[in-house]
Length: 500
Image (cartoon, rainbow, N blue to C red):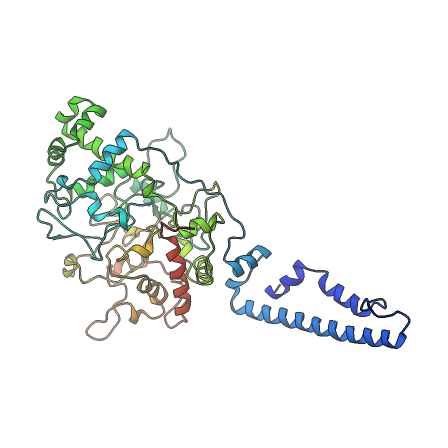
């Protein structure tokens, strides 16, 4: 049934009422004397003409509406409430979001806050966790460098752009396939899970609905490749990374912690002997950093315009509404296929990620020093910075899907920082398959070097099934430039700090 018929579905008696008014002998202007038959007949004929024209306008309007719906089905209202949304920008079905509780930080979290901002814990004495994860920039980098500088003299170039530390409080540990329900059974290794997943068709992602965990797709974890399973594990990584905080060993970190001004807080919380136990001292320090990130509301504010719109406390503009519909449309942008935009069934606000891994085939960033080696490839889950699943080649080229919350505040995108604004990102999604010559470089003979940042033997891992990647070479792109601008307008509503 066409969208134009929805008017009559909602008001089925309307045409009947008009026809009855035109035919009933007593349908007269109230001031006309009933005894004047000539005038009565003329009035009835005039009324019939008015009703006839009214019906013609209604029918023509419904026909035009149906024609518009055939061309732009994603813009069609499905209920009266959606009509209100389209007109006013209000959410026709406000929801109650179950937000994280706010309470004073625990003593451990307060200790973690001091560690998070302590530059003395780096080899250079100039770098802290907050240097790459600035609270003023949604806990991402404060600059537009493709990768950050670090090392003993703050001159070494990093490997990947630091992801935001915001909205990680619900991140599960890294795993492959469905959860293991039998708690009494022996743990299943990643290799066993991957082997059992071989040949299983990957679930298609669409419509912003989280699919049942596809057996072959990794999920959860931290860093771009998921090599850390907890915030505590993540915190120690930069401490020991030679191109970041550049401590030589855990003992090196412990030595700095003992010299820190807050060492007495360690002793109060964990006993005086903690200062003489380097491994335990560092373990508790990283636990404290994790507690700080978990407890402090600034890491998961949920104060974006979209959050307020979900709760009925803000109105979206027409451009933002169009962008939201396109974002969710499984045949257009299909962003919500991976960046889930709807609250969970129990009212948790959306995190705008399914926390799964995708091989997108983004072009190689030739500005990164490590990419000057033509034989080097950053292949995400299967290496080079994690090696426990390096032989599971069906995952080569897969990287964690990041949250899109506060995405408009970022200056570099994807695991290699190859793009610098959201328009470039959207053009990549839109043109990767339809016009690859606009995305990838050309070799000496002029041939497009598609998927140039992944060895050819692993390129079958790259997603070509989910929209908008389901288009073929030469096809019309999924989105127009105007639609891309609307989607970007919507993504700007995901920035925290909105005042309704």
